Image 1: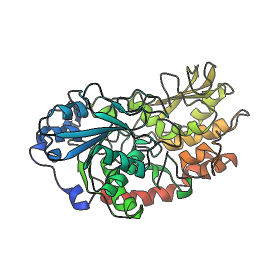
Image 2 (image 1 turned 60 degrees about the horizontal axis):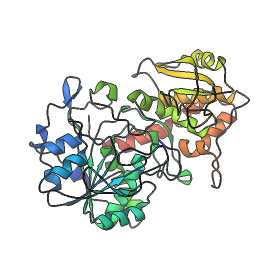
Image 3 (image 1 turned 180 degrees about the vertical axis):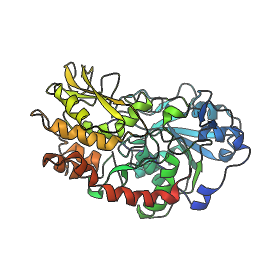
Image 4 (image 1 turned 120 degrees about the horizontal axis):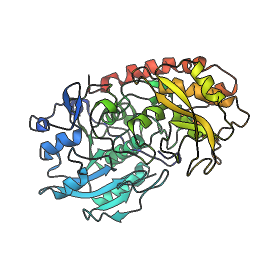
Length: 430
């Protein structure tokens, strides 16, 4: 995912009654999906809605917020399927960072265009705030917005903030909001620091824990009840979440059997997502986070590191992970064309692996090298990019002060407990 400040994501919320309402028996006919979790078919919300004949969208003027991950179990995109349906009125598509069809790199988007496959207008929603989003919705004439994007479960992955802005915009124009839910690929674990409001940016608009352990549908419920009432004129958006069927909460993507479509160019596998929940912090340093390699966020290194880096990390005995001494030459981004020494992060036990504490140790040990530096973000009140990613100056200042990894990770323990309590009413699974 890009590290530009303008990144945004849209997340939907609605009334508790609407969210809690069970899906119709006809929607349940979506059995037979390709994925399985513990012997049960895992059926994403898009397939559940499709099996009902898209009944919830009939008679509506529908806009769709999606990217290449919005596929049905036959691998067709939901927009392609919707455009073929008789009796549906699809008025436009809204593309986030990387674009609707996924043709743009990190920090980029697709400009407004007519989609050659469907003939629908695709609007550029990347970086749009709620006011601009509302203008796009009104331009398209949408009275219902559908969100279908695979998230990766981390605060600084921008699609959830595109969703949030879209929810606020939908509320302002009187449109309803529908989330076609998908599993959280890195499970239920909650970890990491809470965003402090003064550090809000495109990689974190509102207070949210770093690894939130929720699906986008659950986040939409949380946003709608906890955040939207305090945004602008207040109030909630009319929200409907079409739930995943057959998914056991906490199951990593590797165990659902569902196909993995990269939600962004540097998120090629579920293993990438697992590492990214922690190693995404390295975007805020002068180390390469592996962009320009085949394993972004699993390779981490710099020209000034050496073999001692992997030795020191392995000496911690961190649960569920080992570090292989690795060398790589990024083909783009930081240290392009230069040989970087560092590590390949190898998750040996996904159930024990803790992405955030692991990344804390990685930062502490990298900081010991003379060449280490925090990445500057000029022209802002908070000039360090790591502060925006971590949600405050706390992580950076603790690392700079020489704090031990366990002491740093303990600093947000109470925030994690409080968020686990706060999110509980909005969980849909388990």
